[in-house]
Structures are given as C-alpha cells and as structure tokens.
Amino acid sequence: MVKLIKTAALTAAHKRDLGRLEDACKNGADAPVRFPLEDADLTFLLYETTPPARLAAALFLIMPQIPDSNDAAECIAYTHPALRRRGYFSRLFEAAETEIAETDLLFPVCRGGRGTLKALEALGAEFSHAEYRMDLSLPGRGPLSGGGLFAVSRPQAAAGLQASPPPQSRNRDAPLICAVTQEATDVFSYSFSLGNGEDAACHTIRYGTSACLYGLSVRPALRRRGIGSRALSHVLAFLAREGVRLVFLHVSGDNLPAVSLYKKAGFRIAETLSYYLY
Image (cartoon, rainbow, N blue to C red; front, side):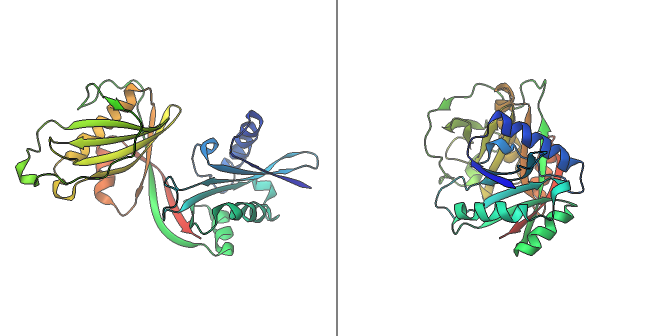
C-alpha cells in the first residue's frame, strides 16, 4: 500500500524523510540533482505504508518565476534505489501533470543517471540542452572589487535594459554604478550603469546562506570590455556582506564566454546537467 501527499510546505518530518531518501540515492547508481528541494513550489511524496513504512519516492515542481510566461517548469524526481521498477515515478508524475496544464516541463539529469534516462525515454521526453552548475564559496571573504555602500530600493518590477548613449561616448573605466532592487523577500535585481542608462543587469534568489545568481546580461555593444566581470564583483560583494556563503548558477555548456567569466571570478563546475523536455 502507498500514500501520496501533495504539499507546498514541507514539515520537519518530511524534510527528515527526504534527507534519508537523498542519502540513499547518493549511494546508488543515479546521483540526485542538487537543489534546495524544500524551496520547490510543489512537492509530491509517495510513502509505502506497509512495514517498514518509508518514503519511497518524491517529485518536485519548480514553476516558472514569471506567471503566464512561455518559460518551462522544472521537475526533479527521486526514487529509492531499492524500490524502483514499481511504477512509483509514474504515480507521482500523473499527480504532477494536473498542476502544469500546458506548461512545458524540463527534467534536469546528472551525468551518469542511466535509470533516470530510461524513465524519461519511456515518458517520451527528448534531450533539450546541457548546462553546468557552477559554485563559488564565500566564507571569510572581505570586500570585493567594486564594493561600497549598496542602496536597496523598495520592491518593484524589475526593469529591462534601457536605451542609453552610444558606447563610444562612455568611458569603460568609469565607476560602475550599482542599484539594488528588492523584488521579493529573497529576490534581488541589480542594475549597473557607467553613468547614463542601464548597461548590465542580473538577479539573485536567496536560500538561507546560499544564493542562486541568474540572468547576468551586458549591453551587446559593451561586451568584451570587462563590464560583466565588474558587475559580477559588485554582486558577490553584496552577497558576502549579506551573509551568503555559497553562490551557485547554471550556464549553458555552449556559452564559453560566460563559463570563462565565471571561472575567472572563482566559480568551479560542480555538476554537468542534461535537460530533457516533455
């Protein structure tokens, strides 16, 4: 007998059971994808109720950050290595499908996840793209280049890159002005300018003492001039002063300039992920 639970708020008991399930998967053939799973938008838990009762499988949905957008949701699923081939993933996925409507679904898979790949093949998911997860530890770091006081504005909609003077009219060595906007409790947007208009931007989401960095962009006409490196330095300084100790990000394996930028800032490749689209 099994019991299916859907929840948007994990209890202490759920987190304890998930920790045990994750440990079991780490020791198996398929390494689980690293993600602060308690921060998923929806979690589906499948318990075996016959003794010894235990958490057999779990599925996590991370919905698009912008509602009604064309962005895909993400799905991460674990099944206890000793309890596979019992249809538990199918049970969880059928329950999750009712939540995603017509939204595309991406499944991240760690390199070597043969069991997961077989399940996705049976589902009909197709390979979409490969990404790196890159990590940077911040413990003990002092002020970084580009540090200084950061003025954080009240929550508001994030602005896109606005029109500004031609790049030749600006000095790339001029001070890079950083404005930080708090979009939500743990979501911040950063806007950078050489003095007139927005020249670079990025965002971070806080997870306790960790933070995810995403959406780093530099105005096309100003690329390859060190603006991205300086902007990234500002963000890392801000996060370090806010008590963040680990920064992580995902970047396409084909985006060599971005991978090089992050490596120069101290990031290292922690995982290679393959994304399958359903």
